[in-house]
Figure 1 (cartoon, rainbow, N blue to C red):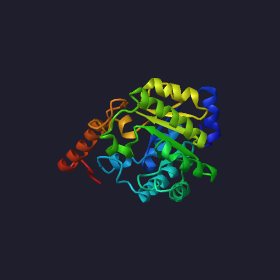
Figure 2: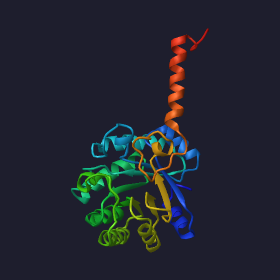
Figure 3: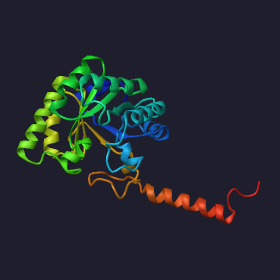
Figure 4: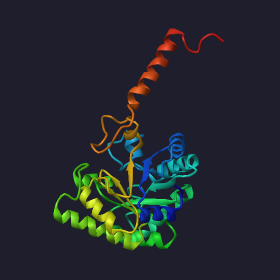
Length: 260
């Protein structure tokens, strides 16, 4: 896959499923790109995965700009998406444009913002001014306090209908992709079939056009905080822990660096 959004639209039409993963630095971006990952998301999840914060709300635009730049430097082929962090876009479309422009200049091909109907004007404003947007609905982590925690969304008929309407409205406003997090699989499938733009799922079942997971969850580096829908493909925490323990042991015992 390429950074071209037109090729993502083509994949949607042809029914080809695509992969997204988060990355926050050059080495992991380079590894993901070489592995054939189709898209890399510089998520504000870096607050939790990199900084150890309890949520994403502390992440600044300056941090997102820095991490976007170093990730883009490591990925030659994958589409680069960057999150607009909390407080950088909600005030007005003009504020959102200024923030999004900084992320685009840092290397993002598309920016992601959280929220449904209240973000329609902002999505239209950015899209009409040359900044591709991915809309994020369902469990939107920047609303964690409003939700009362990281809770699944769209569980009632009324809530599901609102998410369905929001997805259509956001796509009609110009969103090039719609990410759905922690919503019922049947609802995500219904939205995917209704929209002409690609959908991305995280904890939203198997019927979306693409899937995204957090890098640390995929690598088993986040065993105590990984959501129930994530899948660890290796036990990275154990493997890295063993390597570090072996290094420390060899240093203490004189086995490293050894004789010159």
